[in-house]
Length: 348
Image (cartoon, rainbow, N blue to C red; front, top):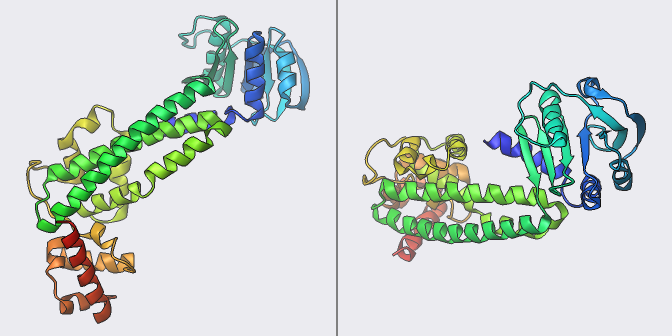
């Protein structure tokens, strides 16, 4: 799923508003002539081409508009920087599957499936631009439509973020009293995974909006600021292993789950390495709390978590016990103890 999404994003970046290619496509669309454009002049593509004539000139949006008035396809270089052929008849393998009904779109889909090149079909009747890349098919939408959907997704993401922040604060209070249940943890992981999906959806809209998506990108960055790192530390506190690579692996696996699978809290618990009941009490290692201790280097925080095992044991440690940990002297030990006590009092 992630690879397919990234592949689509790469394609959308090439035809986003503000790019010369998108300008040329929009010109053809508004003229109502329709068109078929292939990006790539590989031997496989040229082997399907018949007739037409060679141009080999720099890409110009106005030139594409004029050339699309002819019935044949236009072949561009793979990078879209040059117009190579025009008025070409393409004859792909008719045995390749296609669900398209129009001749132009059926040809575009089969050429893309056969060659792997990006092929663009511009419908004269439906007045829409369709992209084909192998088995991938995507219809470009008007920027105003994409912007509206992006704003709706951002509003949903903001609600998820507020709820997630509230749940993380509640988790912090429970951690200091030793009352965290597995259900509390997996609910946060689930909500974070849903937020990640919405953020990925918005990222797709940003790619599609191109130069018109700058404000959306800024809003997305602000909404997600600090959240991925915080969730990684939640995973490191409660997963079977505490190393960051393991936490990232869990996050990546969740990104591949289906929408239905992500709703199964027990499945998330098993992914964390906790096959038991959701009501069972679990103890954090304390890495997330230690992360907020000022001027405490991450390696030293990891030494503390490894030495004491749980946050409650860390909270009850004496100055001398803290001082025994590698990288901590008496001064830092007193600072850590005082800061943890303040955090505990503020969580009540």
